[in-house]
Image 1: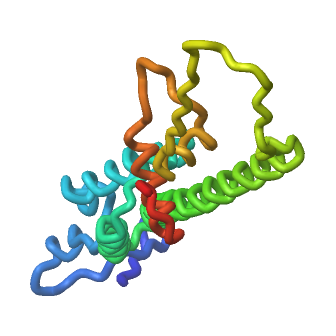
Image 2: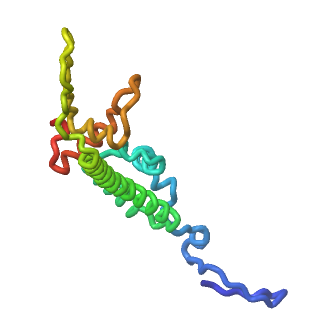
Amino acid sequence: MSISKSLLTNTVKSGLSRSLINPVNDIFKTTNVSTNLLDVLNSAYLSVLERIKKDYGRHMVTKTYESIPRSQEEYIDLLRQLKDLQDETTDKELGLLLDIVEQTLIGSVNSYTLYGENIFMAADKARLEKKVEQILSDVNKTSIVTSGSITNTFTIKQNIQLAAVYNYYIMIYGIPCADEGFDPVKLTFLAEILTEKGIDPYS
C-alpha cells in the first residue's frame, strides 16, 4: 500500500501499492469472488432442483403422499447431487437455499414413511372395531329358519372375498365411485405397505 500527501491541501491519502514494472495492470487487478448462482446452477443442477420440487415437495405440501417416489436409488442419487452442488459454492445465501431444498427432499421421504405407518395403523384399528362390533351385535349366531316351506322358491347366497389390498383400500378411502374405480396409485401404495408388513396384498 502507498501513502501520498497533497501539496495543496495537506491531505494524506492511501492506496494500493504499484508495481515498478507494470503499475497500470496492478491497479486494475481483480481478486476471485465466491461462486455465484449463475456459475453453480447449470442446467443439470436446475433439473435436480426441479425434480425435488415437482416430485417430492409438491406432494408433501398437497398431502398426496402416495405419489411421492418410492425409489431408494433415486432418493440417494438426488441427495448426492445436492451435496455436490453444496460443495461447489461458498455463497452463504445460496448455501442456505440448498439446505432448505435438501431438508424438503428428506422431509418428503420421511412424511411418506410416516403416512404409510399411519395408514396401516388406521386400517388395523378399523378391522378391530369391526370385529368388536360383530361380537357385540352377535352377527355370527346361527340363523333360524322359520317353519313351513314355500313351493318353487329358493335362495342363493354368494360370499365374495376381496383381496387384502382392496379391503384396506375400502377401509381407508371408502368405496370408489362406479365410474372411477380403484385409484391405481393408492392401490400400489397400499400393496407396498402391506408387503412391508408381511401381508400378501392379493391373497
